[in-house]
Length: 78
Image 1 (cartoon, rainbow, N blue to C red):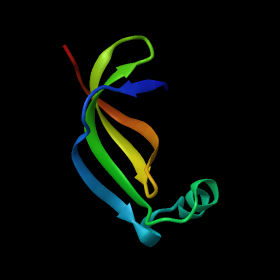
Image 2 (tube, one colour; image 1 turned 45 degrees about the vertical axis):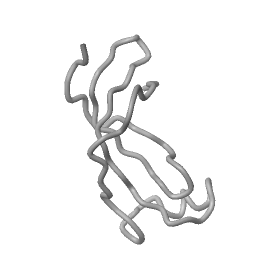
Image 3 (cartoon, rainbow, N blue to C red; image 1 turned 90 degrees about the vertical axis):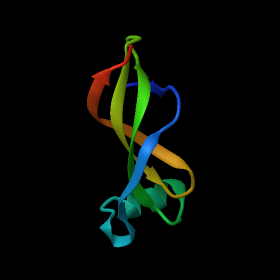
Image 4 (cartoon, helix red, strand yellow; image 1 turned 120 degrees about the horizontal axis):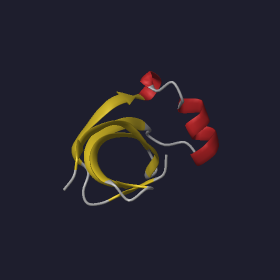
């Protein structure tokens, strides 16, 4: 699903780090070694169809924010 983040990501929290990241080796191979952490947060996003919603996002962060994914839609934005 393609989307664009509109605004700031809030309520950011680390959900896994170090050996707790199952995809660690793939992240190293794709982007290089770094202090990778799996993070989550809430943000307003614009979906490919133009709808604006508030969603919980998960991503990998080590050498920049990589591979965002929508975990769940929380509310329709006005």
